[in-house]
Length: 213
Length: 213
Image (cartoon, rainbow over all chains, first blue to last red):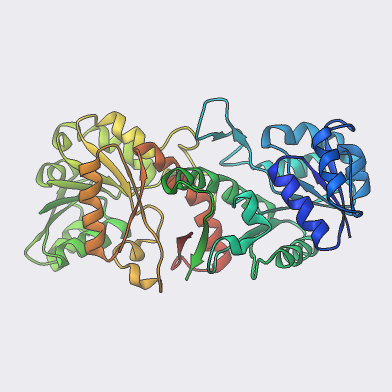
C-alpha cells in the first residue's frame, strides 16, 4: 500500500518509519520540496521511503495521513483537494493553539472539530480521525504503555473506518473503539484538554486511557 | 460532618443518600423551600436527613456540594456568597447545553471552566472540582464499574483537595488523581465531550476511564 504522510514532525516521522517497517511505500510530505529533514529521513529509511512536497506526497499515496500541526492543517488541506479526491485521509492532528502558553487551548472545539473542518474542505475524501489521543511514540507502539488501553476512530464512511481499524491493528492496537460519525472527533479532540493536564500531573506522555466497563 | 447538597436530581439525591449512609448530616437544598421531591427524600432518608432552600442548606453545611444542572449553577451560586464563605464547595456539575439536542455542547469550555466561574463568584469559598466525569450511580459506588478506574480532583487549595480526596475514598475511590489547580477542571469538563460519545457508542453510562502508565 502507498502512503502519503503529511508533516515531518515527530508524529509524521514516527508514522512514516512504522509504515515502512510494515512493508508499505511511504512518501513523506513537507512544505517545500527540498526540506532537509524529510530528505534526511528518506535517505536512511530504505528503498520504500521517499519525500516530496505535500502535493507530490498526496498524489503518491493511496492513503494519506495528516500529521501536520493543527494550526497548519486547514490551509494545506485546502490545497490538496484534487490530489486527495477519492482517497482515505487519516487525521491524527489536534487543533492546539499555543499562542497563550501552556497548556494550549483548542482553536476549534465544542460544536466543531478539526476533522470535520477538513472533511468540509475535502468532500470527495473519506476522512477518519484516529490516534490523536496518544503521544507520538505510543501511536505506532501501543506496547510502550503496559497492559490494555484504548484508541478511537471516528468517521462517516464505514469501509474507510474498517480500513483504518485494520491499519491500527497492524500497529498493535487490539480493538480500536468506533465512536461513530466524524463529529465524534469533537470528543477525542477535546480530550486533549484532559490529556495535557495528565501529562503535566504525571510528568510523562507515556500513558493512555482505558475504557473500563 | 454536616453537608449541604444543592440540587435534587439523581446526582444530588444519590450523593445525599450516600452521605447519610456514611453517618453525615445532610440538608438537601432545592429551589423552593417546599419542594415535594426534596421533602419526600428527607422523609425516607432517616434522622440525619433534612431539606430546605438552597440558602438554608448552604447555611447548614460545613461542606457544600454543587449537584445542580450546569445551566442553573451560576445564578444559584451567586446568591450563596455569604452562606458559603469560608467553606468548601465540591462542584460536580458540568456546563452542558442541551438547547441544540443530543449530545449537548458545553456552554463554558476551552479557556474557561464552570468550576473557575463558580470560584470567581465565591472568592471566599474553596472550590474543588470532582466526580463530574462519571455517571451518577458510579460517583458514590465506583465498584459498579469492575476493576480499577480513576477519578480526578482539581482545586487551588491543597487542604481542601485533601479533604475531598478523603471523602472520595470513603465512597470507595482508592486513589483519586490530583490534576492540580482549579483550571485543570477545563480538562475534566471537556472530557464530557468524549464521555457522551462513549455513552452513545457503548449504550451505557456504566463505564469509566482508567489512566494506564
